[in-house]
Length: 405
Image 1 (cartoon, rainbow, N blue to C red):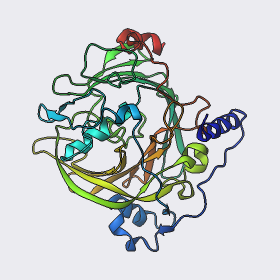
Image 2: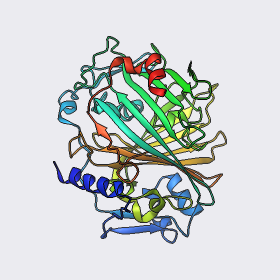
Image 3: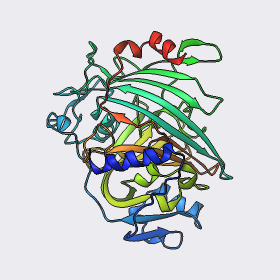
Image 4: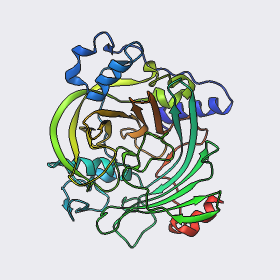
């Protein structure tokens, strides 16, 4: 057992005994950006980050640390990720030399980066997690939710279950455990590589009706159930689903200040890490890292809550979305999203990275929300990657009905 898993085991045991966990970000950061000096660092900040300093000058800051090692691919994925695939069907699908590879290990097009980001969860064969969602109101009060999720990625080379349809990217089943108003709502999603050939399929069980229904609106800018009204479906995990509403452009690579190695957010109770207006800055670790900048502009005649979005994607094997800034049709900045990462968890290699949480800040309401927050401080049930898979029958409408009840 590696040191990280030993640490996580200790934290889990402490949490199970009802004791507080007080791991903090290590001392020794290089410098701090705050409301008094952020204008000196604007070349390394996104418009959303700059707006955070302007909106919350007394409380928002970034502690910037030495840059650590990059995220690396699991050996089984790296071995098959040597040659670029091809975008097909108006770039809504891909054809790759090896099923389960990074689609574009040598990206040359704006959407190559989006495809790499969108499919990085599939570097694992399966996921079991109990994730926490938080909606922090302007007065600092917190609405807490939890979601139990099972995911299988059929294209992963280590996946045991084999599916005849090679277009299936993910089989996703999620049960809401809270808050009470959404508890029991369970969603099944079949997500495909090529949305042109096979658009996303979704079903939902509602305990109020005790019925399973098709859910055709779990896409695009439908408001996410656990998102506090400020997160839409296709910003989940950075970006997911069809890309057809936008024109995509690549705006280059630059060094920026981004969140990285955010174990303190996973190890500490949310009452400690979540402060009014934004996360407690003492528990968020930032580094200077190279990112690729991709801009999405809504096509003429298309409709989406976000008229444009700018994505800042890590320049490493993980292609993690570190920052996303979203704008309305008037060109005004609406929301700033940041993604945090942690190193390996159970079932993964110590050099690989996993998303720890996605935090969206809404400037109009002065609220923020966190989704997919993982760690021993949130749940005594460990997150397991590459563990025992659910059978194919689990990811069916009948399986949804059985699981939801």
